[in-house]
Length: 177
Image (cartoon, rainbow, N blue to C red; front, side):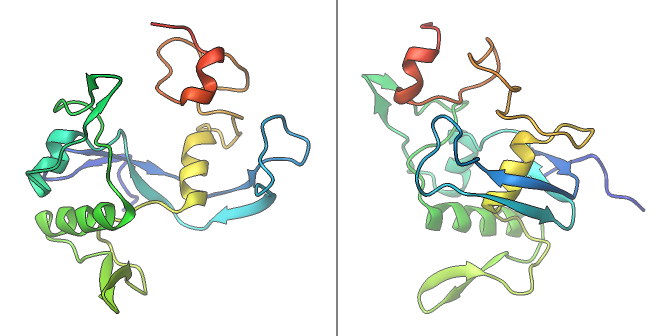
């Protein structure tokens, strides 16, 4: 039976199936805004995978770690239940993945090795973080296999309603709300 286009975790998080594929990851040498450590290379995602349809919210993360607080930016709270969780490091994120796997009766994707968490080898069916290549593929791939330069399309500026893709460095490109 082919995998379903989407699934929902017992915690209510929607996951979407991302197909396998091959693409050029990274930035071309002369691309504007490219950083010195960025390179361009061919990458193959050899099997489909599920990726959350949206970020983990503060409310969802607090089910795992009740005392977590995302804090404030410019005197504005970023700790409301429906907002994306922030202030979470890699170790907290993978511990959350293992906790979410446990909630759904799946094997953990990470195990303790020398006091640190590391991916289980071979990979399990438990929840895990995407690799850098999987993340870029999911952000850039259209359903027909063609690639977008940016998650919203091929040109700037970011269209209204496309999402929160910019940090302070992009402030001059974005409309003030």
